[in-house]
Image (cartoon, rainbow over all chains, first blue to last red; front, side, top):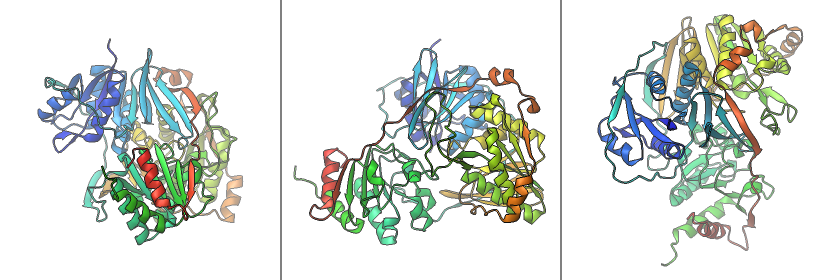
Length: 320
Length: 258
């Protein structure tokens, strides 16, 4: 039997969700990709899925059904070696429910998957990136939440749109909380700046730039580099940045190609959230700051002098 | 109102945390074990809510026998009783087994509301709440930043791009974030009470579980453990005679990052 991976894809504005689409690339390397889309997915996703190299496209025969019920039925139908979901809050919760319901092995927060003759292998880092581990299921499908790298996926060229195969799924009654109110938060990141978790460049500010002026500089550097903004716990605790921007042990873990740490000392809790970044650049006035132990390039100096100079230097395009 | 708090004991994030390269298990000696900060916040919330509702707070943890120490700290903070699930059979339990064991324990302990940290600092998987919700068919309010309790309902607010308010009838589970108030320090009375408190210990057999059960289902097993490549310190330049900003720009360009 061909090895297959069942990938859960959500929709956004009637099209395949970007973050979930990244999973297809990683799943392609491990076997045949069977994509589960919501029951109300429009036919237009079929062509897109085919171009992404999906082998089969499946959906429950009902437009509205709890995600866990659809996934559980899909697992029984397809008998995959692995079930892959995006590593976000929704993906993790769903993966947990599915593993509990199907009594399957679960691997959460995985950064890569591979396979060997016996099945799918999940690759993790532990303790803030200080250890690398691999795990697998003793039997059955491994349920995985995968943190897919934000590298754009390559399409396989023109392909016949896939039929959406419908399967029967039964709804299992479950006790759920009710949503009694939902209000758009007033403090929102500008929508044109990349999302912190998936950005390829992150510029993060710490206590050393803890002021509106300091963070304005961080924002400006982020914009010049086309990156997202992050903050250390100290900066968030001091009220200079919202919690949603916090990088570290109790915030978001990121792994961009470039991480610029400004006025951040580099305490273990912060490193835990970014030490797997491709390249780390640090600016700090303290020559003994631990951040310099992990930075590929560091400048000891006043961020309020270094950053404007850096921004100007980057804005200067060399003559071509 | 009976509130039960799931408490996790973890290696201190301020200490060195290591995995044994042979077994893949956390090296217990590497640093001291502490009550996970998210768990402590959940306990603090429970103590406050119990006081408001003339209720009781019990704590439950799964771990080695040494985890009793952390449970005593919970009693010192004000928890009325503590239960430790401990058995050699559960050493190295994966997520699914952990959830099944805790569900079996919860089925034996009375509770109207189960509180837990939303994500732990040692595994940060943030899935346990969902797994318990599924196994016990209890509604789950997850990643809650503000919590309220009435005689029959639990309400929570979650802050994100949207601020969402959720409500569930009791019994229910809520996982809480670090936005909740700081945990209180134990007072001298609590510390003395903790010394003499009786901690109930449940073994696998007490939960009706045996080796066959552990082996029956699919389990996630570790295949390999290795230390990650340590990052090396790179070039450090002092801003002054050399312009630091220009130096960074040159470095970034040399790497194709700008």
